[in-house]
Length: 267
Image 1 (spheres, rainbow, N blue to C red):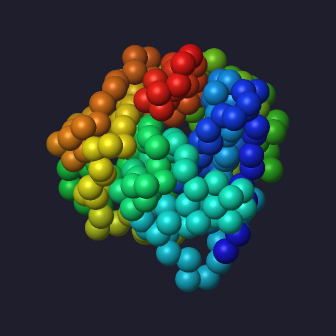
Image 2 (image 1 turned 135 degrees about the vertical axis):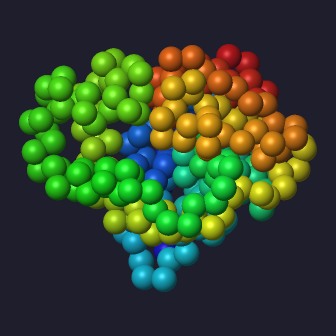
């Protein structure tokens, strides 16, 4: 299949490439706050995963993190002739990014996993009711979202559990996120692709790995979904203050600095 990929050229000549992989129920638009900071040192490639954003969900598309990671690597090469790159992923996309490094050790230069899924104490055997309700609510309210999100109460209802800094979110960010969830036909297939699984792949120690969680992540809380012993032994585990499930929204400049550091680039 053809994934919808978008390239944002760097302002720096000869810059390396970095691929950004969004989470379940999200889209490439989730990276808008972070992209300008990354463009200082990277050519940025964003991706809409199957059934998300501008990429349709095709019948029989495997949605487990390993299969999606293989698909992203193949599409980046086919569409842009890029075979080596750094990668960032958030949530489901964080798990996918880690699998990309495990499978393609000669292609991935570094991994930054933002609040990655797959580090849970016990595997999920069914979809959690709360996240299922979130998808249904977004889908049913999509038509009214452009109006409702102009009001602080609506933004609070939609984003207070996502971030302690939700009041600072722009109208555009909130609308993009709501519409992305509403359009995500791949949401439930993605959920099913994670059932009965955890991240347990091996990543070569030559690939630097950052795992970054927020101290206020209610989506994947530390008590049940942040098992540090499952992380690659050479990885760096970072907890950001005043941060929820989307560190690229709460602290985009800090995330960009950490990415450049792990990639060995001057800030």
